[in-house]
Image (cartoon, rainbow, N blue to C red; front, side, top):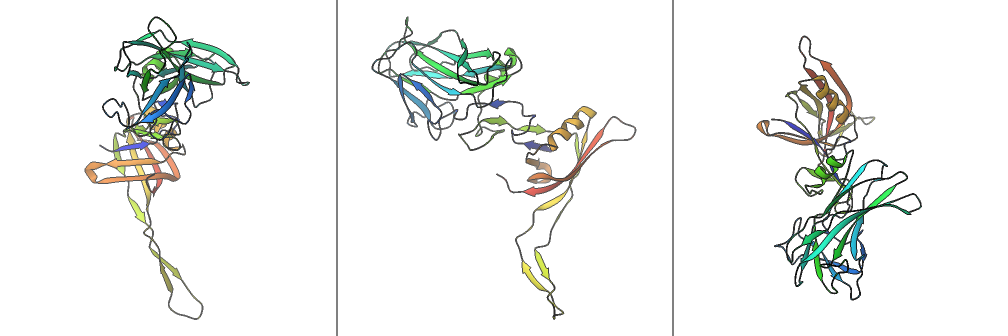
Length: 319
């Protein structure tokens, strides 16, 4: 079956991870720390949740009840919208169990805190992953938000000095409802995950699940290639001067059949975006990337409730 995918830049992307440094693969850039020293380590491959690195934290010598690490959500906050964070943590090199919780803070346009929402306390058994999660609705006036993970002791919010903690695979989302936010935040992905893309520089930008379109049938995607020859007609000669350029990419028209007007309209919305697309039809040995290079036509098939979408395309290099 043929599929057409677009990177998460499409407005129809099904989910986004709003943390720009969710798995600490290249740096600790963007990490907000209080009362701990942070670093990265790749020597703990048996405990990594995503990629090859985890975030390491060592509690300072004189910690307090607000010992925490955090990261900002990358999108401008919409008041009334729900934001959720899931920040996995693991006590390491400690004696006995610990506690943890996460918190979302909202800020106005003067960077003044105007909202604070904690999760419940989570027990954090030594050398085991815990997945504290919180969802909060942005209050009126909010323009930005950040999520923080608080490191606590047992029976006290103040952690033990020199405790070592690890963290990995941070997930931050926004949604219209609390239920949708909690459902979206439960499954981690970043731009390196299968079926997802970075929306900017890898490991320094938010990421989104690719939008996948599956037409009922591909009717046609014939293509042409421009000639490699550049022909000049010099004065005073009956023969042309010919230069050879690189092979030209394919161009043509891709025509698809959809089972309803709604599906055709959705395809129209996707192709009307500025996104790049990835066409795959394994049965026909076709696999190429393209952009919409010309007109798009949506047509109802006469006598039946099927619709065709035809888009002029030009092949481009994969990113």
